[in-house]
Image 1 (cartoon, one colour):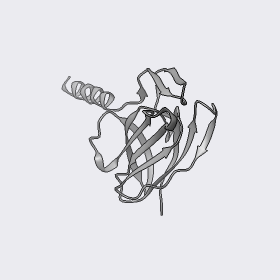
Image 2 (image 1 turned 60 degrees about the horizontal axis):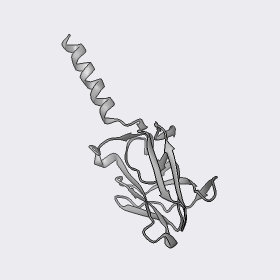
Image 3 (image 1 turned 180 degrees about the vertical axis):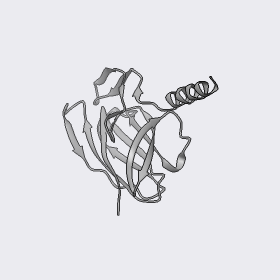
Image 4 (image 1 turned 120 degrees about the vertical axis):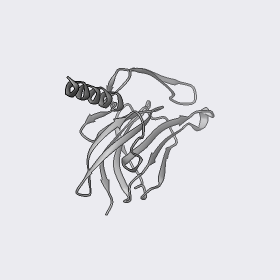
Length: 164
């Protein structure tokens, strides 16, 4: 019985810390100078496939990584950053205070001793299609800011890797 109780407690703790799915929410951003974009985002996985992360404007997430042989082998979204040496902090925001100069910003904190890189696709209210966008590698132990002079609904970040 004690063994079962211990396993059950571990299972519940693991479930409460790992965040496989985002909760459903209403996304509301400025699309351009005069129009807004609003969508009901259903409960959905943060990782649409293994190591392929989708993040919506307004989200801040913690991505805990497992490293095997100098490679990011596993990634999962966690509720809290309890392992800061292996958790990437990501925040995706919009500044639409001046509707003539809407900016969207992605902030990524690299906790690793090596430069971190990834690829990105963006989905905008204007284009309504997935478009590649350039990303600057993040130096070891530093914070990186990517900005775009327009609205972005969501980004897909994939091909996470260390630069050699």
